Length: 184
Image 1 (cartoon, one colour):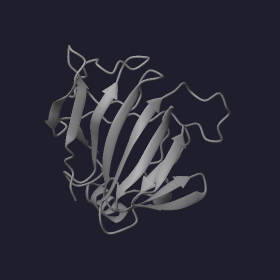
Image 2 (tube, helix red, strand yellow; image 1 turned 120 degrees about the vertical axis):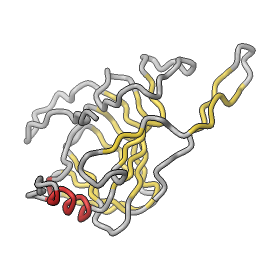
Image 3 (cartoon, helix red, strand yellow; image 1 turned 180 degrees about the vertical axis):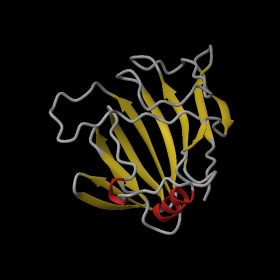
Image 4 (cartoon, one colour; image 1 turned 90 degrees about the vertical axis):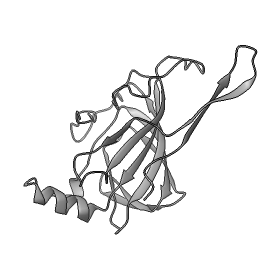
């Protein structure tokens, strides 16, 4: 499965002409420590850190990844999700077995996420509902407790934009803290 994604960055030069400033592979790729090395990857392609976004603001592509940002900021991410059975076998091999696969990777972010399946198949779990998604399917994820699980034999690739929001002003059935990316 391809886990490097070319990211073309454009902007306006000092005379207002449209130019390409970068055709590089992103530097900021993190390994999620629940699978063998190089299998569960999260790559940040770009992010905005100002409100409103400044289209010409510089961005440090080596900045540490955090899915928690101030409201109004955004991140463009790609995730390679390995098969759940590989994750379960790996976690068992390092004496951290997953006791409830249905709840594995369950999390919530204070964000509105626009997600598309780029390759493969993944199951979105929200509450007691499981929805199988395949290449081209999209999700608008709005600050709910959810999980992405790959029940196939091959990796799945999802891509999306995370728009950070304020915490929803609703009572939640399950108290979940926002997702925190493990330090590397």
